[in-house]
Figure 1 (cartoon, rainbow, N blue to C red):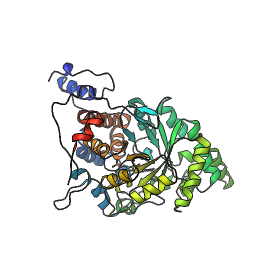
Figure 2: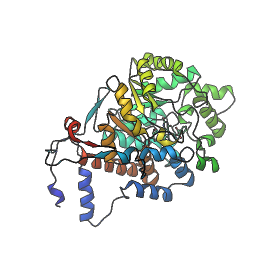
Figure 3: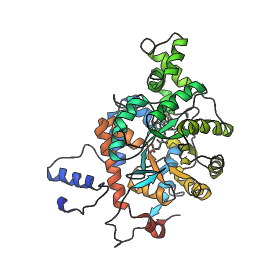
Figure 4: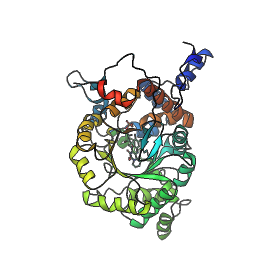
Length: 408
Ligand SMILES: Cc1cc2nc3c(=O)[nH]c(=O)nc-3n(C[C@H](O)[C@H](O)[C@H](O)COP(=O)(O)O)c2cc1C
Ligand SMILES: O=C(O)C(=O)c1ccccc1
């Protein structure tokens, strides 16, 4: 195929990445690394530090939930493997356009960067790599409370007009919570995503066996170290970041991620705080896997839910996230914005989640591995590959309602 002869479109140009790949072939060069997710994983395993690889790849227990997110078995086809697309031909797809709106913001595709903590274990610049690429591609970026770069630096890397969310692990210390929310709001974070499935970490054998908890060694406390209220808390204990990086790192993690489970009664309080402080910006809960919980969250007034099982890292033996999406969409899809994550590895997966009713998806491990392999360029490569892959399958969505699907 003549790479200069691809159809031209106005926005966005995801298929340009296909052209870039063709051009490499013409120049006898190769892409940065394979775009096949399985090979990506293999390469990440070889390239990342042992701790980085373990932390990104470990799942709860026997990985049953992680596998349920994607895997087929002969007897019980599950999740992404069960859902199949029925391709239809000779539909005019030349005018396809992946842009969509999320909470009033135009984004260039229904794909967001999932919140991921302690990115410095993958690359010295950590979160800045992903925030920058997200801004550049016009995709929402979500910053984790357990980040290893500050709110301010991430916002600057993400860019002025970029859409960014703040993922909250809520500290019981109200003054501290207000302070981090204030900084997020002042730095242009337009929605709060409260994660409710990780009051404590899942039991991940690889991490347990290797004592692989970087946040307990002083990585992942950047939001605290750069926070005036947390700085006060350090001083009260006679600690400083410079002299006591490990203790203050532990103090931060113990504060924000205290192992104390909140309940539904806490939701209105946390949401009200964000709403009052931000002038009513969207508040979402992340980690919902049942229609009943989705209904409860909607009754309490959330603006959105993230149907997610944390990539299978929390409850071993839980249902596949895609398998529960239809029930959740059925229960609340007309009342709230339903986002989806856990197990997205390619364009067809994004397509399936959207076809089952998600408004957009979040992606985690794909770009983590890309970052671990090749920093900012690795994130860009993985995400442009995902977009190019999605673009091929994408047809304007009114059409998809009529013909996209086969399952069971
Ligand atoms: C290494 C790693 C760290 C994560 N850290 C966070 C976090 O700090 N906060 C959060 O809400 N979710 C966190 N998650 C979950 C992701 O936001 C997301 O739900 C999940 O990765 C999506 O599945 P995928 O990786 O298969 O795309 C983390 C996931 C991974 C793999
Ligand atoms: O590991 C995780 O899944 C996660 O959510 C997390 C929480 C705290 C620090 C780093 C990551």
